[in-house]
Image (cartoon, rainbow, N blue to C red; front, side, top):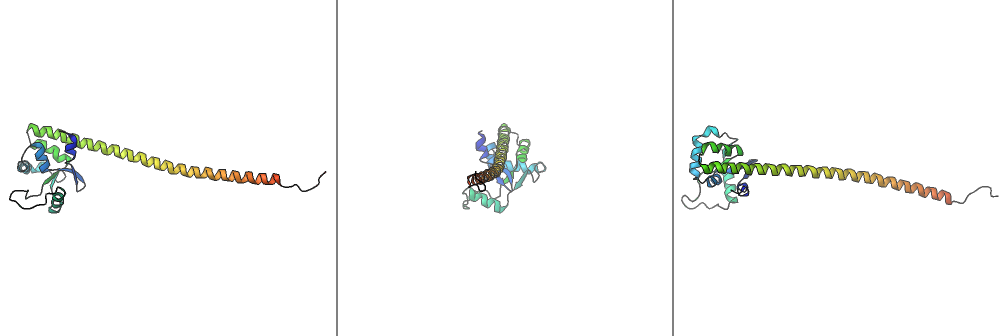
Length: 174
């Protein structure tokens, strides 16, 4: 599967990059309830930093982002808030879901997370380089200002010297 399609399903919730159970279920081609059942049967494999259930507020905000705020219709929308899986939780899913599709998707998802980390690393390097350039330019501006002041001083001294030479001499004239 295309890594960019997977990256579009990675969200930042509670300061962590996570994927939601319904996105994972569609990628693994299983029902959401089956995925949740497998996770609940293996709850010790999923500590809080691997997987957590969204709060009502988080889920409400998320639903508004997906434009699925309608509440009517029996069975139309999930009653329960989705599970959010961190990268480690998704890796742990490979031990819970045994289908070939799940294994292949886990590999693709891990590659998507790695690609995001590489991008972030490159972005941080670029940010550092820009900061270095800014510091360098500020330093150069200060140095240029000092050079300008020195040139002004030299010009002032030269002007004084010329004025001294051009003055009419006083004293004995033969």
